[in-house]
Image 1 (cartoon, rainbow, N blue to C red):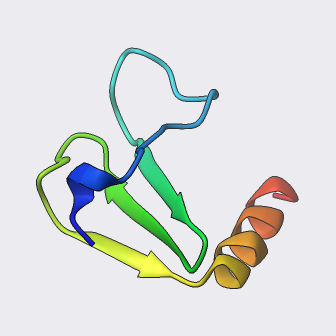
Image 2 (cartoon, rainbow, N blue to C red; image 1 turned 90 degrees about the vertical axis):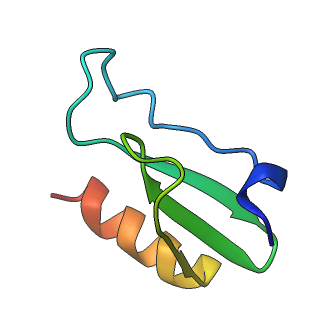
Length: 61
């Protein structure tokens, strides 16, 4: 799947000053993640269940 066909977004907690931000694009069978400072760079893909587990863990931190 080409990254241009995905709708990428950052967390509403991300500020406008740059820094350590991730962008995420969801798809029914995958969640794609990339560095917001390098949108043409590498991405990684995880199953939606793995992303949900990560998000729940991160929210509890």
